[in-house]
Length: 371
Image (tube, rainbow, N blue to C red; front, side, top):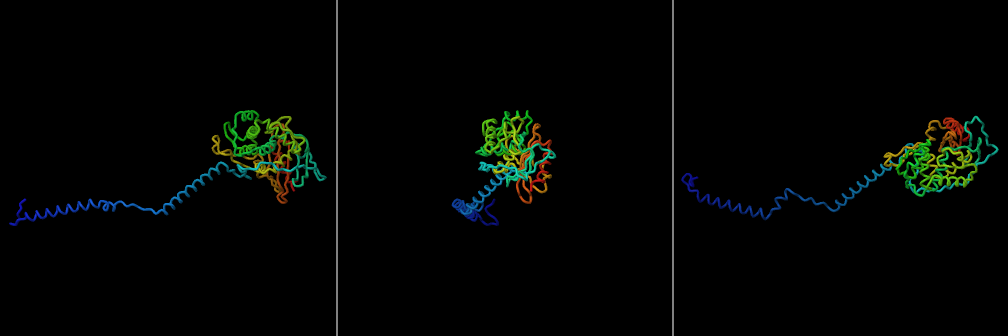
């Protein structure tokens, strides 16, 4: 390009412009190198959080975690311990297990009514527990086979000997297989399953589980035969003259017997024990979660399963135990109270001819005698 334009010399002008541009370029570099952070600070900002805000945030997070843990624990407990339509619940630990029953000796009075053969059961007794008077009876001291009402004594002796209700027992085929051969009723515990003492107590009474009853005996005494010794010892302590046990479940044995009178005393002793009473008055209960039963086992009372909807209008049957083997007939030992007076009674019927005469017979006795 020519250094002249329109006859003018621009060399000096361009040299001056070049010098000026170089000078400005150098100043720009110096400023850029001396303040490098200022330009970046516009893009990246450091947020400063006050200490109080940090503490508050930590507290909120801890609270959220604790609430979540509590909710999870509550849900787990509900799943493993909940009982559907239960009449009562039993604590799973720290339970006072001693029976504090006073001597109970029901007596015949001038007003005691002797029942006839129109009543289906072979042995009957109705007792006013407050006065101890025998209101009515039929062969009340005749020895009869008690079948699974035996388990009331099993329950009572077990509760008096359990030290830790969270302790467990592992079910085995040595227990379940012979019971299967015998055709005994069971709660449904499986070989290898670890079962709490509380669950075995419920399993003994509600579904009349022989597996649970024998499990309690083995756990507490080392064997069923040793536990039966405790049952007979307890019978002697209660002053029973016509009772003898050979097993914990009520399976037939000619030397396994009781009377309506003696069974009423056994039931009364169990009623005085808080734990026994709660179990005897429960309709349904779900056992703890185990590997074999991830949802637990729903246990239902053999007593209430046949009585709900047909209870006497004037009285409430509060609890008890049923039983049946061919040799004994149908047996029921129950307790309840008059809906108006609230007086409490025990009603025992042994040796009914079949299931419904046994249940309806009990209901009729409550209607007639529980005043």
